[in-house]
Length: 216
Image (cartoon, rainbow, N blue to C red; front, side, top):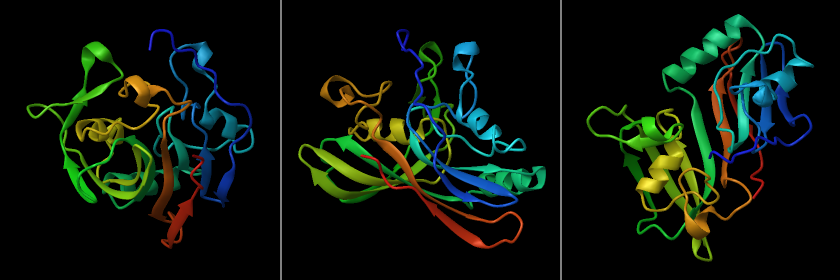
């Protein structure tokens, strides 16, 4: 990653939902959710949104390389309410990924604790001694040549969870600059997309579902 150059795609992301309390957008791959280290990584999703929505507040993040549905709060009350939903694992997330190879089973669960791989940050790794619990449900949608399109549902929200869990399963996500190698790495982007997010509206309590079409 030492030769990595941050070159985010231009433009403002598509707005999926907007009201007085929340803003939901479709984040493109290659754009940071929040500012990174150094002035060259100041351009990010929340700063772009701030131009039109000065009160925008962070609730959760998507990795730089991941695209898809992400929700922001527009009031502190909404931020606190949504934060509690994420913390209590009340928010349901559905991702679509293209992975290398064909898993043996049609579906399953990866239950492997994760911890930061300090010498190789920002990479994460499985560690049964000191890792934090992490679970991911997965299901095959279809085979695409030598690869497989899958639905991934994280039950916990660890950093790089889906990416490390798929690697541990023996089927890395295609285009992953950190965890894929060889032919699996030779894709223009990480083939991971946050397709759907289900939560309760922080003001009304209504159940809401937001979706963004898979771009690959």
